[in-house]
Amino acid sequence: MTVQTLPLDDAAVARIRSDFAELRAQVNGKPLVYLDSGATSLKPANVLDAERSFAENYTAAVHRGAHTLAAEATELFEQARVRVADFVGAEADEIVWTSNATEAVNLVAYAIGNATAGRGGAASARFRLEAGDEIVVTEAEHHANLIPWQELAARTGAVVRAIPVDEQGMLRPGAAAEIIGERTRIVAFAHASNVTAALAPVDELVRLARAAGALVVLDACQSVPHMPVDFRALDVDFAVFSGHKMLAPTGIGVLYGRRELLNALPPFLTGGSMITTVTLESAEYLPAPQRFEAGTQRISQAIALAAACDYLSIVGLDRIAAHENELAARLVDGLQRIEGVRLLGPTDAAARTGLAAFDLEGVHAHDAGQFLDDRGIAVRVGHHCAQPLHRRFNLTASTRASTYLYNTTSDVDAFLDALADVRSFFGAAS
Ligand SMILES: Cc1ncc(COP(=O)(O)O)c(C=O)c1O
Image (cartoon, rainbow, N blue to C red):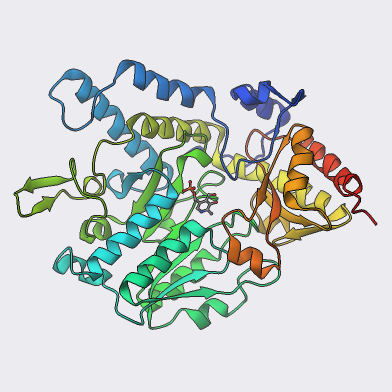
């Protein structure tokens, strides 16, 4: 991983922007100001080329064919796994391809449910849940890291408990230690919130989980695309992220798991490509990661994800983080100056990633989004798949601007200028 410390200068951002077709296009007759990368990012030319090149030149199913194209496709597919593993500080056999982060969380939850039902033999005993065991999340989770645990609890008799957050969306001091205890078997939380932009106290949560003998599952959807992340160094057991939020296509996500845990976990989906021996009565499974990759895989998407990792590494994750930090500071400062804006999350830009969600008094988020769209500014509106957190803030929806490596200070200023007009346009200004 390239490590640089200086933020991106204007010339570097201009070079980056030239790699993204949408940033050369017009929306509503205006240059696109894309502030929705927290939902999905734009894709640079090298990623699109990698996907297309595979589809054009290597079409073959991996791992099975006796012919040259199949061997080459397998080689590229497995090289992509090595590349992505390196990107997050893992070994290749600790990386399982999924369709997205949501599927990756479901995979772990269903596999633990299968272990609880007695599948996986003695090796999987460590995953078995008993009635009354606790799965701990936080009040700030994306539904993808909440509902699969609710379903697992419903299937096993376990209980989901949530660590509360304060008015700024930060975990209340001491709250985690009150919730994580001897019945805790799983602690699942987002590295960075997709609403408040707050970074989780990973060290503290891992320490408490370890003391309780619980597994740690990290939702890294909003961190891996934006900053250097090393899962081994963070000492988590499982982690998930999605390719489409980090310059790669949709349809590819990643489950990271410690090798020894993945190999002890029974499979989730079953079928072809994940077995050693099959009889009419039973089957034996391959070691990880193949035991979790049933059926024909998303090959070109995995290869494109590796190309996205190349792109991000060449720019430098440290520099991307520093750049987004500058944009976040401008965004947070500007938002706080606009009358009627209630910023969600910490006001200290250093404690945030590069996105900002907010409520605009007297204006529905959907109206604000429509107004901004008319000016060529793309933002996200709604509950951002975090209804419990919005309820905590007494809101049903918010507006979210999210930045990435290709955004400029002019994007932030264009957004702030347009936003300053929204309330008077809707007659909500005092
Ligand atoms: C924090 C967080 N977790 C999970 C997800 C789910 O990602 P996907 O829809 O790609 O599975 C998202 C996507 O918005 C997210 O922001």
